[in-house]
Amino acid sequence: MEKTEKKKWIWLIIIAGIVLWAVLNYQVALAGIGWVARVLMPVIIGFAIAFILNVLKRAIEKYLFRPLDKSCTKIWPRIRDGIGILLSILILVAIVALVITMLVPQIRSTWEMLTASFPQYWQSVQGWLDVKTAQYGLDAIKLPKIETDYETLFDLAKRFLTSGVGAAFGSAIGVMTGFVNTMINAALGLIFAIYMLAEKDKLSEQCTRLVRASFSESKAEEIFYIGRTANSIFSGFVVGQCIEGVILGILCAIGMLIFGFPYVSMISVLVGVTALIPVFGAFFGTAIGAFLILMVDPMKALWFIVLIIVIQQIDGNLIYPRVVGGKVGLPPLWTLLGVVVGGAVGGLIGMLVGVPALALVYSLVGRWTGRRLAKK
Image (cartoon, rainbow, N blue to C red; front, side, top):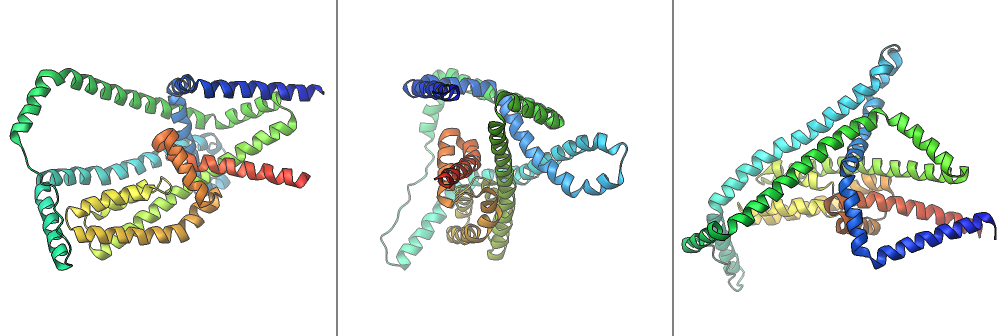
């Protein structure tokens, strides 16, 4: 057996041993992965922010800096990257601030209105059901009554004051600690992202030299191909999902304005933002929107669901395949699988990352299969 073959079998045995140990001790393995993820969370967040900012930076360089690249020759090349990073951060902050500004005041006012008027809304829904069941000759549908039992509330308050203060205090401390840790990780992540973007060319050169020094030329080229493919797929996915979210939000707003639905701006923004999650995202926004409209007019809530179904059909057949499908290159079944598996593994972040990650695997497996078939 040749030396290279022996080395390959040794590595295969080592990898198989590690996988077998991880399967047999999956709780320890998951705990270790979780610990590593918590330690590296600022770096992971920074990499994600840097990736999104880099997409914005490349768009700015392509469409805004091109005239300056031709006309400016002295100081411009020195400040070009810095201005691009600054503009990218400002655009991202402006987008997030715009979404928050549009959502938070309306969510607050809507919540106050619902909490104050929910019993009346509940009665109106019961009245609407009574009218419709009588109109179509159906059995009466009785909703559960919502009553304020002050004696029960007093008992709950007394038990809370006597025995639940410690637990509540501990929960509050836990929530505050988690919030502070999240803010610290986000701040450190932003700092990491700025450094990554500022040193992007240098980091790329160092990684290239490290890969070429560690692997043979053919293996190094394979790694570079995987990197280029991953960058192309993830960039296309981010851009495509953002464009699709904007289109869905606009279509939702137009439809709601035409049919006179309430909460147009809030629900449209919710549908557009939740559409960033493939497959299931728009349904989350639809459920929230339908519930809010239900409190005002149950029939309009039904028509709103019909409107979103029509928009989803237009999106699934015309928009998504052209905007996202062509950029990611993943069939619908595999897209659904990526969302489900990603959500099970990483929650909301997993849903966002699952589709492009599976698209990368799909592309690489297809390339490997084509090569194997060509050799036969």
